[in-house]
Image 1: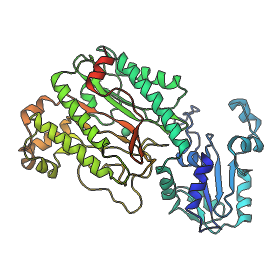
Image 2 (image 1 turned 120 degrees about the horizontal axis):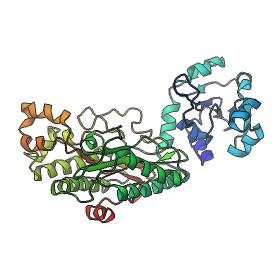
Image 3 (image 1 turned 180 degrees about the vertical axis):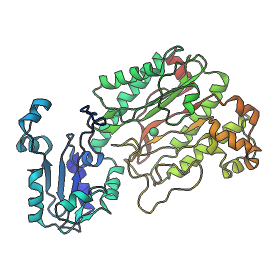
Length: 440
Ligand SMILES: [Mn+2]
């Protein structure tokens, strides 16, 4: 898989046969001034190119010959005492398949002999490259790697599917465990237990386990609230397989039965998601799917008498963004919000609700992304809107104020763009009747 990734990257530098690509891997980080080590997570670009999941490494790719050199630290016996191993250069060749392994204290001399015309590095590696007496070029590599990473290889898709399968099960287990009186952190424990049982030890992000009004906080971090009868519970959590993420959201009633207002609002979000999913196929654009989902949301809100007026006007005045203030979705891969959403030259759209859209690109086969419309009642957005004479006429202030502590609803699936549409990796129940059946 990583051999294929290196070849893909090198095709973008094929006119530079005297240049090299220099990549530095991640280092261990510690908690402030203590010896407590955070779990090591390799830097995603380095992982993409090498597959090496160990700290303190770097790599050099020769654009002309294609030679791949892995640069390893020279470790002493003391390292083995604490960490349990010191591998030889040959071990590394066997394990990761570089053409050659050199020690980091040999790199400078080796580069001096090589005399590359240009050294391509990522922003932040300038200092490293200057130390070797060479001039860094950091204007291209980042975009080149993003370009490669957007279209997934078969090996990457296999890992994404494994991550999705673990998250599917973990979400289902949480859905079955939820009931009034449990705590948000208990539900996180259930999720983590099932993720780790699949050998997926590191979460790709910290996860949102938000009940009641907290479900309207887009990146809610607290997990100490007790779940109450009659409220909604929103779980946005994923797992990671060899660095590849899953990222799924489900929202359901704590007591297992949707109330009439919860049911009406839930179905609006599900309709919005179905509408967006039907628009995912090669040639279509993320922003069109976003606006189509937003239109379903304002139409649904009008049917519930929460907003009023002409649908086109509600769209033109960005009323949808008061209730759906984030992007429809994002690329998914080695990073949860994966790279490549904004290729060079593409600007973000400066319009409420679209400003944070993380992916503007025409869909192509083998892209992997999330589709996650949401509907929230956020007093911080609604209060100023109700006080704004240009907008308040579109809003049913009395009914909206009654929903200020309702929270929010988001439904998020992970999909692969295919030639004839999409493949949905998420199997967690999302139709109301199915959720109620599972929660019985
Ligand atoms: Mn997401």
